[in-house]
Image 1 (cartoon, one colour):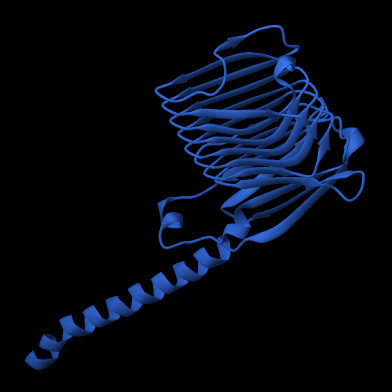
Image 2: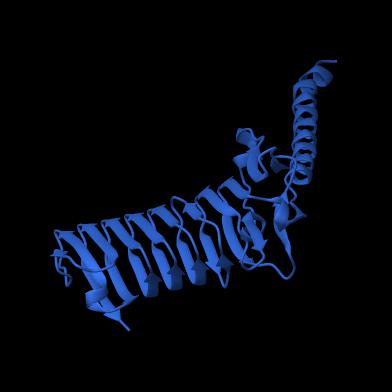
Amino acid sequence: MKKIFKKMPTVIIMLSLVISISACTTNSDSQKKSTSFAEKNYAIDAKKIEQISLSAKGRTVEVIESTDKKIHIKYFENDKEFYEVHVTNKNELAMKLVTNKNWKDYVGLNTEKAHRIVQLAVPNGISSGIKIRTSKGNITLSDVNLDGAVEAITSNGMIEITDTKVNKHLKLETKNDDLVLSGVSAKNSIDATSSNGDIQVKKVAVEDALKLTTKNGDITGTIIGSYDAFSISSNASKGKNNLPENKKNGDTNLNVTTNNGDIHLELVE
């Protein structure tokens, strides 16, 4: 009898371990199912929308040309991270990321980058305004022609715009990364701000005003237009500057400011 009782604690410990491992395995399997991403697609006639507003923390947002006259959104979601997508009574297409995570959901998980991309496709010449807000993700626009105003804001992510035309105001803001514009034109104005990152422009054109501002970064590149076409205001605190600090009598305003960085911009025809 004594031998039996001596063995009992060992048996109890073994049973406890088996139950614990089984529970962990079950929880792990359940967690994998709830965090498995599925591709989703949303489409709507562009004529029905006056404003597009997209808010998605921790996501990269890509804006491309639609192949038809509809707005298309491709994204990925699961039970823990999903999107609310709806059209308001003011004809605003609103999309917002919603998270339903607890601390366990952040342990040992490494989501593929492809699942953290939201792709927005819009028809060329779309009149809707576009507002994009994200963090820890990039914002890119490529090969699109937009009649509405565009606002793109991120942190800890790059903003990169290539071969894009905006007929109204283009406002860009990022922190802790670079801002790159290549082959971009705006009929009204461009306002680009970066903190702890560089601003690089290549053949950027504006009719009204171009404002470039950065802190702890350089501003470099080429701007389309003659020297006489611009009224220039520039300041490079703690850095070098190849532009005049104050030049008047131009139809287009060029305002360039950096703190703890250099300015080197060329005006090209």
